[in-house]
Length: 132
Length: 389
Image (cartoon, rainbow over all chains, first blue to last red; front, side, top):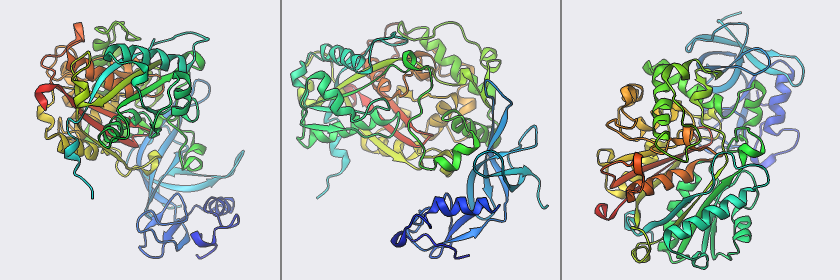
């Protein structure tokens, strides 16, 4: 997908990395970048590859499947506990997210992304399990 | 042409150290008041006058242009300043930078200082700064910085079988040291069960796995080894130091169980010509109990994954084989937002033999290790007395 490659030489408000990421999310898509030069997955998005320094980064749709790298349950003083996790997404990047709909989040468990449209900006969250 | 860092070994020395009032100082006292108080005390400790200071090193999350603010308050017009801002480890980095500046002739007497009235002002745990990837973490509600360290602890438990009891041993050892330190903030009894049954904040870390929120300030004076020998106290020499960093946001940390202390430690040992087996005592930045375990491993005091077992049975507590955080650490002595300066203060006092009930013997060679951000920045230094030169 070559929509709005964010090239450092042509950085505009319309193709800024955060803007494009948020646009994909608003369409229900978790997106990341891939470096044309070294093929590394890049996340969070930026204007250059943090590995090779290449500036040609293509946006990709994540397939959304991953595994839990680590997880913590946050206990607010007011309100219910919730799970914050680091997910190794199979496309080759790691991200922070919430794992929802479970009592416990085992490290190593397979998870799958979905975009949650609630109050505020859409958020990519994960549920336990693979497939649909 | 560049010179090898080995040439800096022992060329600069810490000649004065002090804390300000610590704990909860009360409304009306400002951050720079604490810096002023610590500086006055450090000058007295060194036998120097304010007019001797010609360089200021400072980092603050509370006021902007930190060295400028401090210079105005103290009435100093420094010819060299450094506001390196890499979180709580900054002050150990400042020590290395001061040695470089002194060796290069850019200054002669460097003041490194920090202060915070965090407890009196807000009671909130101060993070070391916003994440560059804020919008990629914040929406998920991590309680930072605690959750970042909780994620590292959870992964360490998963990979190596480290237990919550072993984490708690770190807090208990810190408390036992604090009981021997008259200015430590919390000195009542603490057991492993107390830690485990405390309020969970971000699993597996309870409130007792987390550092204190206190007020406090510190000051450290550094000068050349030559000048140091003419001053009030025996010089404590900077033998080697190393700095390393790998990420800002915890989600960008390559391996949550291996910090860049591996690299900062390697560099410091190499310059100093010592290894972990030579060290008499260590001061590690214990913002959370997992920190102590990670740094003991990464700095070579035990193998990766064995840190939990290493701290069992009081090994790092008073009377144990391996003294760690002899002032009570950030967990029980003092943690005013950033703790790095207090690593230097305690190590220098130990090497001088000034620590009374908590004095370690022998204490010729101390390792200090600062951490900043979310396990982001790691700075190691080796400090020693005349016999280590």
